[in-house]
Image (cartoon, rainbow, N blue to C red; front, side, top):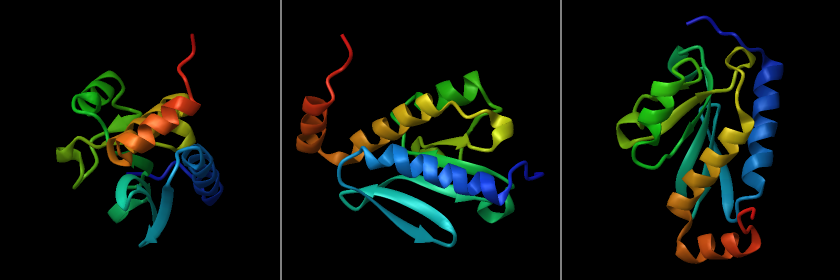
Length: 135
């Protein structure tokens, strides 16, 4: 696959994702083989992947609710994909390169949903109390 992104695009994606997860309580990150993992309660809910095993993608893999992966990939296969390894568990891949025109509002919602799957009931309740849904 041809890479359609630059080092500047990688830096911008890292910053954008970091800004989005900063609002999700208890999130930590780790680095492994050039990729960045996002965790809550020591459970991973997202990976920022840069050319994973030479796939040519700048992408975010996000833990998703059952059915979400199929819906997103089915609706927009140019932007969303089934990531290797974690795809069978329902995770969804999101291309972050400029050519994919990432929908950062959708990415923020997916990250929050992935966080909720691992955060625990008390953390989710506290988060919801501070972030009531719009009327």
